[in-house]
Length: 511
Ligand SMILES: Cc1cc2nc3c(=O)[nH]c(=O)nc-3n(C[C@H](O)[C@H](O)[C@H](O)COP(=O)(O)OP(=O)(O)OC[C@H]3O[C@@H](n4cnc5c(N)ncnc54)[C@H](O)[C@@H]3O)c2cc1C
View 1: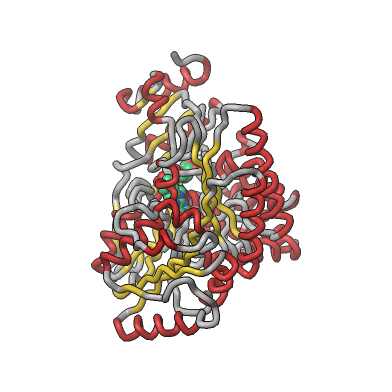
View 2 (view 1 turned 90 degrees about the horizontal axis):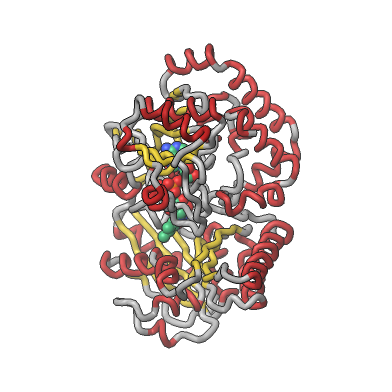
């Protein structure tokens, strides 16, 4: 039963929004409240929004009542950013408009279309979107852009931040801004000059602070989704460009993305993949640094425990079961416009790592059924581990990044922490080319001892990532509830204060 300000909000919204799309009964709010993270919060109200006018109304009325609003696209987020105990607004599969430019170089999208569907539409143009999370067939454009999600190939060069070409958004006061529409920008300048001036002043203050500006530039050479995209303040001067780029990775906390223009990237027709196996993690990481300057599109690391977790799956090469205890694999992909270049690439890759010992011969396959199986296994690692967990435990995936030159030692350090704290089932894998590692483990939150063990793990890992390697605590999964308490630790007081100022400019009531 709704009460207080939630009741008032319901009354104010239900005059305009169809009551059949506003849920507040316990069953629906429980069922719709869940995302892919391990957090459980039950929203007071869930609204399936139909269009931008409804979003404006919801945001305006919620702001007036000081009620926090959380958006949801597909709800595959892992850090707890798509759950709330307040108001959840779902803009999912009905927000699926899409317009491709004549040459396929740009695409304008609503937030509820999945990345997989977008890529299927772009395929005839030989194009795809840059961001490539493993969840791309479920994840939607709203979540992909608001999380600045990335994946196996996109790195820091082709993520939403780098490929955005325009955005239509709804601010907390309900105003619509379209950065691709000059007329809209003129009106916005007239109505929101204070906001634009504050954004410009903030950006100037960061640019003038040379050590801070340098630190921001350095940190974004690595994948980083911890906190707001501070690079927007150093990379751009036009406040509209800054706003558009700040929205990327803002996890719905600065406004609602109702449309986005993305520049597309080339989808090469020829691909070859190799599952290379090295005697240990150190040799594998050494190979990664040699591969970095070769024509690779993806290098994914899978440790022995990860290989073991999939060795009995259908189609997995039998030799995986026979590997030594410390073996570590790299799944390496190269792409090319034609077969000749593809073969040249393969030769160059083999040459690049010829000094590193391997446990098995290096073999590339360009047969789609074979390489698709290898990638399916890699993409399925996290769900496979989740499926094996003991009842009553939850599966947790962490998402850190180290400077790639430190990847070998950092991975060994990480392994040591996991072993010391008894996380014997932990699996390490990830986008090695970017120094971005995931570690997955099962956690029981049922006893104070287990909670304490988890606390120790988080604090030792944060110390390792931040203090020893100056890495990212969340490389691609977004900050969420999970990393919010650690943003200041990673970025330091000054940068964190700038993030608070950003929030205050967009949404003063929430400061
Ligand atoms: C099996 C699995 C594999 C994954 N692999 C990867 C991976 O390889 N790389 C990676 O980066 N992530 C990965 N993820 C995490 C997640 O899938 C991605 O971050 C994805 O982009 C989230 O998209 P979504 O549509 O589910 O967003 P949601 O979870 O619905 O929302 C994500 C965030 O965006 C906000 N949001 C949603 N819509 C809007 C909007 N219209 N306007 C403003 N804010 C909005 C939400 O409030 C939330 O903060 C994986 C998840 C799973 C379960």
